[in-house]
Image 1 (cartoon, rainbow, N blue to C red):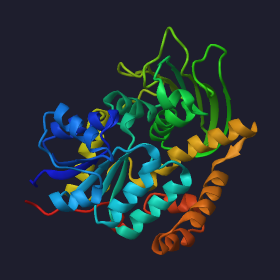
Image 2: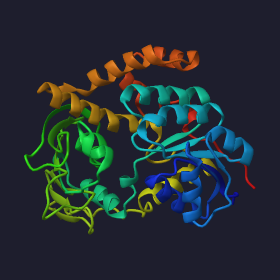
Image 3: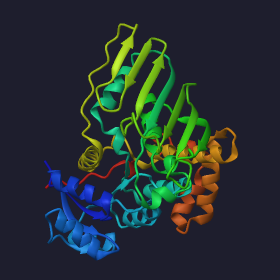
Image 4: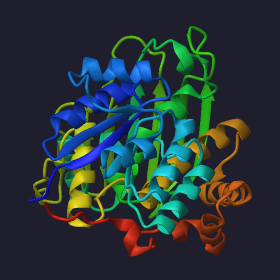
Length: 378
């Protein structure tokens, strides 16, 4: 056994408070401090969580050094993901970050290279992968033979107020990354291209397009079709969406809440699936386990995660142009922007060494040290 992993939590807003409770509830993790640019916000979050005396600070690296923290949980807003994570990695601190990995794919590629140069683990919390029913659904997919079409329907009507209702692409940018990432996980396939249309219903309370349909070609020829709306009151789906997977030997369905249902002619039984934990608690547990054992987590390591954000960026580009978009073109343009913007010479050198972005993101492409950092036993 090893001692609990001491972490600094960065970001004390609404999502930060959820993470704060999760950290405090995990026996394998210990809260070393809370960071926020507004110390009053950090103090209020700590007090509400029942830890009013926990150390506070405005800088994650400084507070981690002062408290002896071993890792950072980055729950800042997307535009802060890149600077906060970069600083932590080069201070020798592994990072567990909220989705998306960064504000755009170019910054995400910079973080991939930073993880390689620093040799520190960076995991993105795609929390929807941590769901026992989803893992059972994936095992059902494996007995359906050749797969044809995976669909997701997502229909909700939340009235958030604030920035989401002012975004240009609220559904695609803020929510669709969850099902896009889940589709990759279920199919064991990667995106090749996408055609997407966005629109905003006349009754929508969103400034940007709150509805979209996207058709992805995935590796192996399977299609993934997503259709959703954030202004569809009545008969709403689960926050996980409603899923249907069609294969040569039958169909599996999941409503996003109850156990999935399988109808197959293959005669094969799905393998039992392990319970991965639920949502952010599951991703925190997997991160701590990876650092304890020195092995890469099954989901979310930065190299593995970037293509989920690339799906979002490609869908937005398709909606804007009205044309089918190749994901490799999105990756190539992002690579050019990353090279132009990078300020660290060591990170830029890694970026410049890539002859293919997709190959650089492939499993096993990372330097071994970046895949996990074992912690000494207590």
